[in-house]
Image (cartoon, rainbow, N blue to C red; front, top):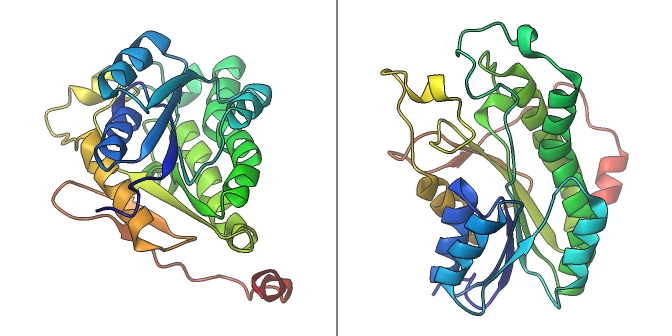
Length: 258
C-alpha cells in the first residue's frame, strides 16, 4: 500500500490535465482527495465519478480569502499539490510570434497571480493546517521553462522560475514544521494550456498528464525535501537537479536548520 493511503490530499487545478490525473491517482491509492478549481462543471463531474469521500471545491487560487475558507473547511491535511497554472501566450497566437507583441499588463498580472500568488497564498493558508496535522508534504508544479530559456512564452518561464526559487528558499523553514516541499518541472505535457500552434508541430512530442501524476506520487514517497525534479519524458523517471551555490551560504542558514 502506498504511504499516501488514508491521507488527506488537496489538489489545485484539479478539473483537468495534470491536476485531474493526480487527483484520480491519489484516489486509487486510497487517499481522501479534495480537488479545487474554478472550472466547476468539469470538476464536479470528475469528483462525482470518483465518489465519496472525495470532493470538489470552488477555489480561485489568486484570492487569499478563498484559500482561508478552503483551509477552514478541512479538519486535517497531509499533502498539498499546488498545481494550478496558466500560460501568457494567447492560444491562437503563432508560436514564433514575438512575445513582446502580446505583452499586455492585464494578461501579465493574471499570469503572475495564478502561477505565483496562487502558490504563495496556498502555502500561507495550508502550512498551519499541515503543521497541526503533524507535518506532511507540498509539491508545486513548476516547469522546465523555469530552468532554461523558453522563447515560446518567456513570461511563463519567469513565473515558474519564481516558484522554483521559493521552493528552495522555504525548505529549511518548513522542515522546522516537519513539512517537506518539492517542485516538479514537467516538460512538454499535453494539457489545455499548451498553445494550439505548439500542439500541432509535427516535431513536438508530448507526455501525458498521468506521467506527472505518477512522478508526483514518487516524489512524496521518496521522503526528499527541497528538491527540484525534472520530468522530461515518459521514457524515464523524474530526477532531482543538483545545484551548486555560486556564492558562500550565509551563516544564518545553519541556524534555521539546527
